[in-house]
Length: 296
Ligand code: GDP
Image (cartoon, rainbow, N blue to C red):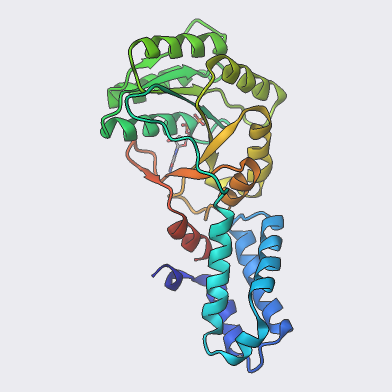
């Protein structure tokens, strides 16, 4: 039972509230403030937490709480539902079809886990009988092509890149063309990142996207970036049509609250999470366990 996993300060806050003899607005507010603190610590953006508080106050009826013995359950359920709702942008992302060529472009800052995630995504589909291919359009980071080549070779996935060419747009176009001719059904384009959000990076993303016309742009986000998630996701969304999000490093300490920000900023769903450095440490995103972890 997912709700039973609610833990830490949130369950303490709910416990305190249900111990109170009278549940009035003050007690409910104290409880919600405690929950707010826990969610902020889990990297959920302040504005989103505040919106959630407002919604919960609208949903939770104080009279019901006073009369009922399951106050905790009512509030738990309301919080849980609100967070699930925040992770649902209301429309599904583009879903590639096996046997029909799709181009998927990966974007994200350097170190987010983009290159690793490209291979994981390719490998995941390859295991299901797809014919994926990897294109390294990252000409910025020294060693990027070698890393992709190494990963791709290990997974026996065809790859394309260049040690000489410095124009990422040219490589991306050549790679996509080649793999279209080879009838690959999932052509994955890995792009450059930078340490921070720079104008040059976004211009490059725009150009690569314009030249390769991807069916899907995937934004890769490190779960440990904390409150920076919203601005980062928004900056990418403003330059390319981000259609889905992958949150990496969920095996670490971060609770992943930044994912809510990424969904809000890009209006796109999270579709996978990265749970380790290995190729198969990759899972389809599932809202309920994710929210449980956030609250735990
Ligand atoms: P890029 O610069 O965005 O292409 O990032 P890389 O793919 O090179 O990844 C940066 C580092 O993060 C590498 O050491 C990866 O092994 C590591 N990494 C990527 N995804 C995950 C993950 O889900 N969990 C863990 N623990 N490490 C990851």
